[in-house]
Length: 399
Ligand SMILES: *Cc1c(COP(=O)(O)O)cnc(C)c1O
Image (cartoon, rainbow, N blue to C red; front, top):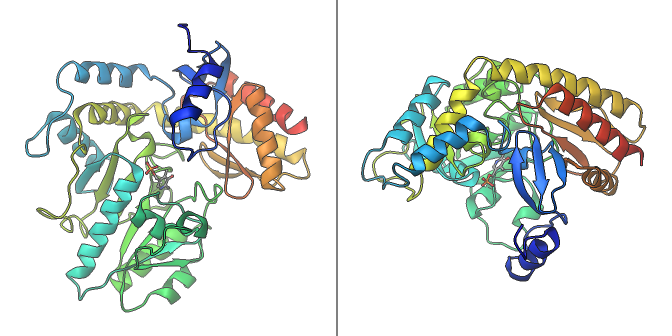
């Protein structure tokens, strides 16, 4: 360690110069491998949060790191005025593994949703000028001006008025309310397959199928925000697969590059031509290095071993967490899907205390929604790491 690089010194320097947009814990990490992280003072932690669900294959997965190294030595960036290999391979993989026909590549979740919103507006523009998009209360779709307008949470919009018009919020998990809200201007419905930031809330079975049916009947686009649920997080490569219905558009980001910033809007047959020549663009979208990382990530996710292994890990984790939750009256039922798991607590304060206790013991978890513990280890988490993490969480809850 060089001088000035201890945990305390890194924190002091961050606090002096970074915008104060985040509430950060007093820890600075310098290295990661798989489920493990090490802080600047050499202390080991178990990451059951996967760096905000961005490292589904664990930290520094060898195949992804190697792909980054190799591409960085060949070609780092190319403009979208030319063709490049990593983005064509990524688009091939995204369409071959999904309902998709056309892919727009970008750098983040909010950008992927911006592309989806623009595609929906274009689709409606060609059909009598419909523009309104229904989204769900409690949803989260990003922090740009359009995606905060799409987000069904008042607190992310406060102080940024006037907002972008053309969004209406309906209760999540209730297809009948969505149907009642459809008006002459409505063009699309945008939802998450499982609400993530809203508190790990799965909808009732049949919800997506009912929305699909509604969208077909009323000529609406079904837009699925799979930024958090995609890339194997819920047990299938994309969460819509559980329901046996495909959307018209899906957005991906978070774990698509296993930690490198890459987003994608994947459009099926109905929406594929909505973003045509000149309709959208991004300087860094389709970047060679981030897309090489995404290609390597998708290759691992589809190797036939990673997802079955993740399913076994989920089973073990759920059993352990159910055991912990059942022993505490102030904890609710374990919920979620696959390795995206929530445990409701009695209050945000209680959840915050558990989070802090866990961190003190070397376990990273997170709080989402109103006091829900969000637990999301990498898909590669080992049995012994699951047992260790569950045990640390049990201690954090009991103390
Ligand atoms: C994280 C997230 C986003 C926003 O992604 P950014 O990369 O932060 O812009 C959008 N939707 C969902 C469901 C997310 O989890």
